[in-house]
Image 1 (spheres, one colour):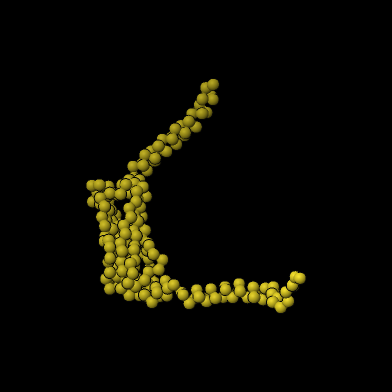
Image 2 (cartoon, one colour; image 1 turned 90 degrees about the vertical axis):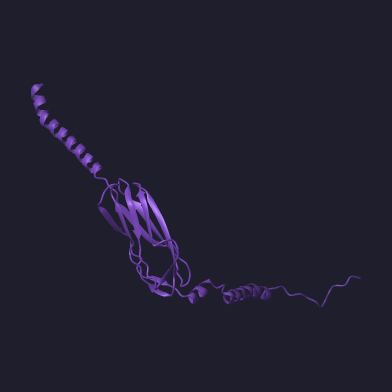
Amino acid sequence: FEPFAHAQLPTMRAAVLACAIALVSVGVCGAEEKAHLLIQKALLTNRPFAGKDLPIRYRIFNVGGSAAYDVTLEDEWSTEDFVAVAGLHSGSWSTIPAGGSISHIVVLKPNTYGYKGSTPAKVTYKKSEGSSDVQVAMSNDLGLIPVLSAKEDDKLSAPHLGEWMTFLAMAFALIALPILVFRPPTSDGKKSKKM
């Protein structure tokens, strides 16, 4: 049996070495899991109109393996183009746990119609509680926001009474015309008399 044991010794050493390397790499990777934030910026309306509320939602997701600390959100909107109605352009949170998320909503009102610019929001955070290393993450950019005029709003939300009256008249004509053409004739002239 001794020659057989010496033949397996290099194979066992390789297996033990591979297991040791795997355990060390898992330990090192697990120790380096840190917070990682993703930011989504989105309009909460399909058609923004001048003079009407325009809600903007910021969602911050922590996709890292540990909590993020001292999280701050900052966003800039042109004061010439927008008026703040509700909410703040910035926010701060002491911590966002691993796998957690936070939503923040601000409501703006566009002053005029046309294409309005938007820039990415900026989020700063720390990967550990006592760290002085500040991480910066940026949200997506909304691009040019097409703000419609109040006249277009009236046109899109009008009751369209003229169109509905035309539709009802045509529908009535389609129903009444066959009834008038194919109704059975009535005879008023000769009635049978009983004697």
